[in-house]
Length: 273
Ligand SMILES: [Zn+2]
Ligand SMILES: [Zn+2]
Image (cartoon, rainbow, N blue to C red; front, side):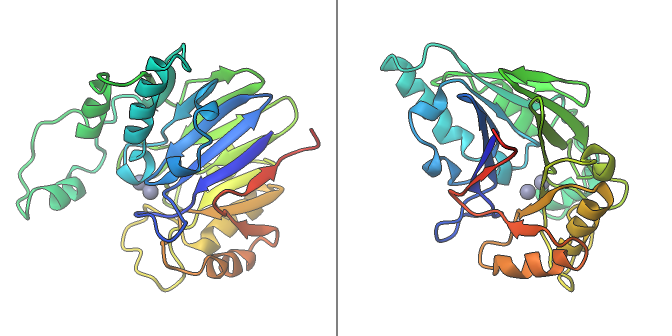
């Protein structure tokens, strides 16, 4: 099983660094976990579109913005005869907002009017996003188990303002857990990533930076999770675009030594295969 990092920063791409995106592959079966802004530039078009499934951890745009160019590419490659089957795109089911207040502060120009929306607009947008593309949108939730060739994917809900899932990808011997975005308290990651070979974990903040709500992790918290879960290796991601990635690694290492940062275009081999 191989992990190729296509993107490791949020919320915008910067100088060769792209929005969070992770391509896992075994025997030609590919899973793209999130597809942040600019990350498709590191896909190997058109080959990577074949035998690919896409899993979006949650519908924040820093995790799915490049679905748009990818959708356009799928349409063109289908027309040219390179793609003969729609690319499945798994998105969190329903996606009811959990925190109506914080959403409206950000979206209603200061008024706190509660609109009666069951579903996030991004969900509605993607569900009807089927013109000029060759994608197939499929809902998933914490119960879903996806099998893609030798790879198996399961999910665990995180602590974040909208429905967000960590994903665990396993083959017969090894496992990679991708945290996606999550707060620290009650996030369930320690259990979910217990003894995983690799934990690919968000580390949005450095100690001292303002984390007013527990919706993301400090780097040292990612280190604590890795230690408590007894994972083999911790790979940090979801950095501020201009920040020095080594700072996050140094902070996480206070708690977990085998830590490094996710680097665009680098391939990480998991297990002996
Ligand atoms: Zn998010
Ligand atoms: Zn994010």
